[in-house]
Amino acid sequence: MDLSLSPDQELIKNTAREFVSQEFSKETILELDLTESGFNKDLWDSVCEIGWLGILIPEKYGGSENTLSDAAVLYEELGRGPVPGPFFSSGILSVNILLQTANEKQKAEILPKIASGEYIVTPAITEPSYGWDKKHINLSIENNSLTGTKLFVQDGLSATHILCPVRSEKNKDSISIVFIDANSEGISRKQLEGFLSASSEISFKSVKITDDMILGDINTDQWDNLYSGILNSLPILCSYQVGGSQAVFDLSVEYSRTRKQFGQSIGRFQRVQDHIIEIVNNLDAARWTTYEALWKLESNMDSNTSVHLASAVSSEAYLKACDGGHTVHAGIGSLREYGLTLHTQMSRTLYHFLGDPKFHKRKIAKSLNF
Image (cartoon, rainbow, N blue to C red; front, top):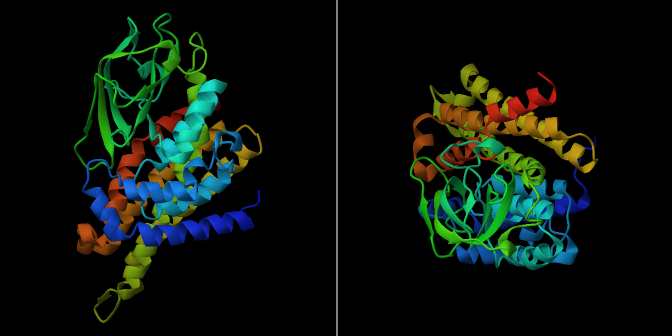
């Protein structure tokens, strides 16, 4: 397993780091955090011009058809911000789901518009019976319409279109994926309150569903294809969490060197060093398990266990890195203007997104026949 970056990946990394430092300064991210959607159209357009939204989209659909590792390098840099917005939801997760579930005509119609930024697409998977397994999907097509609720939809307020897994009208054991215009009659959206980043509730009231809105074959159970799209996306989310953990580590080390107490830098005290070492341990565990998952996916090896392991470790690592960062910083770390709480909030939001560590550990146990 070669862990070094290729020349192209070094270019992606340097370009992304420079762009984030210029366009997504701490002050800009703090301003976005005060908005309901965490979204700015001008910043979105500037990202679209670079072409990052099409990083995984095949060239024939208007994308650049990069590798998963290329995308991981990009999202690690975005995680250092942490850059908010529907970049992962639309450009990674929705793209991977569409590639697995849509027919050729639907791909040709939708994917170029995601690559250009015209469409902002987000999956709405979880419901009041919260969970990431098939059994937790209860919203059902009845008389060619949808009535019900999707909860904890990431970037739901900024989306122009929604990918909605629902029970098929003809076969309730079958899952269909519906591609819905977010501004359709009968759809209402609201931000969820709490220490969350861009998480929303989407309600459907007699929303009309036609056959051409259903992805792929209307008689096919799409759950396995949906799950495959999620699995291909998880290592990119892990990379974002690795970037966030790295940023927290950098903040903590810098503060431990500059903060003076009892006539010396607090980084000279053993207990402060212990906290920083814990951040390093979590960061390294997240980084190497993520790289292994990416390597196995790109090598066409059996990767399910590695992907779930990386997801469990990265979610824990980002959360614990933020906890350790606050311990090192103490009071100043809680000041919103300092910027550490941006990572703390994001780490809590992503901890449960696409499954919390317990969910992924259960998947690992199942794959090992425990």
